[in-house]
Each structure stands twice: as structure tokens, then as C-alpha cells.
Image (cartoon, rainbow, N blue to C red; front, side, top):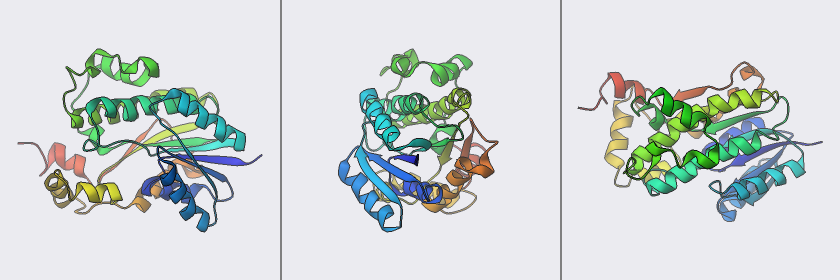
Length: 275
């Protein structure tokens, strides 16, 4: 039976990881828009990968279940790369929580039911989750383990508490890392692993939009004042993704790898510290 790698959100980062872990396997690319999935499928297909394209709306459990069924029909799902989401400048707080927080929880629940023994997944989170102040132990536990369909009803996620898109995004990304930790226990019972990567500013089409948009000054400041002094590339994230999903990462699960050029370090202890 074929081994299957599922890529949800096959943009620059999703493709970079897929290239490193999908040789000899079937690749299923899923995006909210069919044309995006097909464009990525053309690129990977031309590079020698066996690829098919489909759609998914990760904020809908029914849509995610359909994707899981489609993937399972292709073979044994041994890899899941989740790189889909919306940014603070793209959506309302409610949509960010629905897609980035709830959608990730649903994906992990549903793929956790079928992931093959020896399989692995990686969730693309964000440095933003590391710049949110400390939550209470109760809030951490709620984000980690509340059943996905009850997540958005948590009191501290209500509109009166989450009034701006950046706060919603930071909560979602903190939630992703916590969720991965809790799901690693369940995935482990199937002999599989799941980890997160929290990238900083990675030069993708979305980042280029941000660098010419209303938040451009803040972005450029992060790049200029971080210890590494530059933005990252999708290939650098791809290398970490390949480590986490491959045999060299076999002892790593439930982890969140922060790779942001030191932006978070500089935010807490350096030139980027808030006044």
C-alpha cells in the first residue's frame, strides 16, 4: 500500500517540507482554493512527485473528515504537514480563532485517528505565540485538551476578551503549541509523532504583502533588530520540518521549535523589548 503525505496549505513552507519528506510517496495537497492546490501540484509534479490536489476548509469538521477519507483512500497516511491559516492582517478575531485555533485542533483530532504507525506530523505555528504573556495553568490546560468543538466557547476566547486580531492570533498560536503537546500523547498510542514549528518572518508571498502593508514598519524593525539580522527562507523551515518528520527526529514529539532569528529573544531581553 502506498504511503501518503498530506499537505494542508501547500504554500512556500508546506511545499518546502513536502519536498524533503515525500520522495517515493503519494502527496495530497489541500487548500481552501482548488486553484492554489493545483498550482502547487503542478510545481511538485514537475519536480517528480506523485501529487493530487483537493480542497479543504479546516474550520469545518465535515470538510476535514472528507479530506481524511480521501487521504486514507490513497494509502497509509504516514505524514501530515499543516501549514494553513490566516494572519492578523487577513481576518477578524473570530475568523482567526475559528481557522487557526479550532481548525488546527480538528485536524489533529481527525488525522490522529488514522495516522499510521511510524508516522509523523508537523504544525506550522508562529513566533507570535511566544510573545503572548503567561496564561494561567487552567487556561493552558483548556487550550491543550478541551474537545475541539467546545474550544471556541471558552470564556477567555469570547469577543469581549479578544478584541483585536493580533491577540486572537497570539492566542491561537499559543494554543497550537499546547495542542500539539497534548495530542502527542494520543498520537503516541498509535506509534506516531506530532510536533510544531514556530517560524518568525519567512519570506513568502504573504510576508512580502506584509512588508508593503500597514504593518510593514513593525516587520522591518523585527528583521533589523533581531540577532540574526535577516528574515528566514521557506527552505530553512523545510529543513527543520524534515528533521521533525524523519528518522533523525524519532525521539522528538510534543515539541514546538521556535525558529525566528532571535526575534523572541530580542523581544523579551533585547532591542525589541516593548517600552
